[in-house]
Image (tube, rainbow, N blue to C red; front, side, top):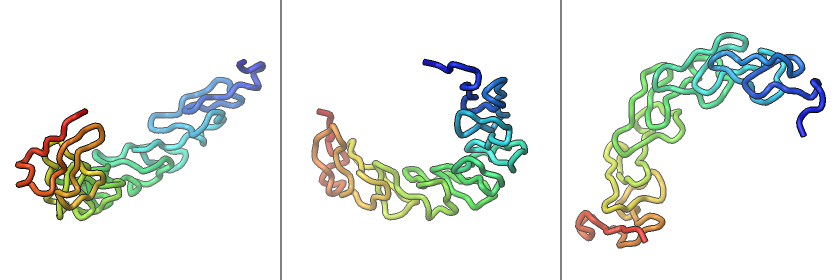
Amino acid sequence: VGPTSIADCKCVSGRYGPGGVDCTRCPNGRTTLNDGSTSFADCECVSGFYGPGGEDCTPCPDGKTTLDMKSEEISDCTCMVGSYGEAGAVCTQCPTGSTTLLGQSAGLADCTCMLGWYGTSNQNCIQCPGGSTTLNIGSTSITDCSCGAGTRGRSPRTLIECGGNCGCTAY
């Protein structure tokens, strides 16, 4: 059963208005956290935008985002997952087969091998052979590669043993 009187009405998330009547959409880059917001002050900058309370929200520079809502300064914009860079600097993509974990990465050393890749250096990740994968990010050895869920085959111990093809097949 829906509301029984106008007093029971609430503005939906992303809108505000007194008493749930005449709801106004928050400006671009802003939203409310919950239903029932009654004031523009409830509109917060969304992820990827920053701005002081009550002012316009500005999108983060290309390749950057904020980790949560309510970001007020450009310094809250960090590199997206898979890239790194100092605050205020241009973001650089991690090398092939590597990524960053949380997007708060300042340097190349924060890149780690992705799932399905292994290596002793974030700059030298090698893809697991023959359809095999790793169970975790940051794997450092081919012995971390194994046939994934729903597949079977020989897990590699060395590239020579597999001949470059470990034969992981679906079952």
